[in-house]
Image 1 (cartoon, rainbow, N blue to C red):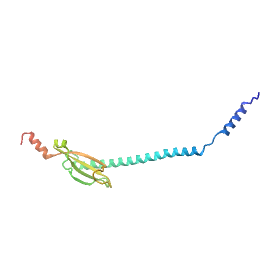
Image 2: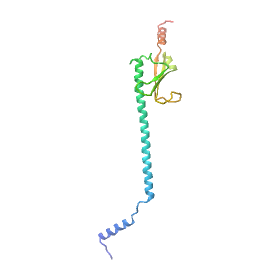
Image 3: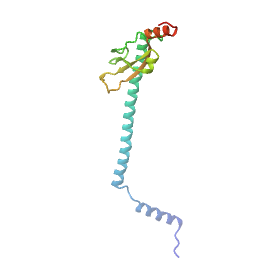
Image 4: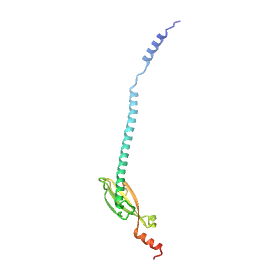
Length: 160
């Protein structure tokens, strides 16, 4: 019986595993590069979308802050909206290239309250103020009709 020492077995086993070990093939390398490229492309696309979304959010935030200051200047910091233009437009102060536009909207619920709705829209630089295009930001203001309110108060007191 031929008995080999454990050191001899270990050496021969090690030689066999080195000799029979496969190298990485070109196909495996290309497959790995394809997977890595796909992951990298996904990250770049996601980052681009994130940057675009963040830029849009920053734009909206600047427009909201500016429109808040504009409405505050119209109302002198109060709650009386008599000086809000029903149909007007102009540059948005504090934000270069932005424009505001107001338009009165018919609303039966507002009319029942002797009021009307004025929509204030903000358009960014290079954006058309046409129907079908979304503004950067818009708000609706419920403005009480002073003349209608006085008539309604007189009627409630019994005056003709």
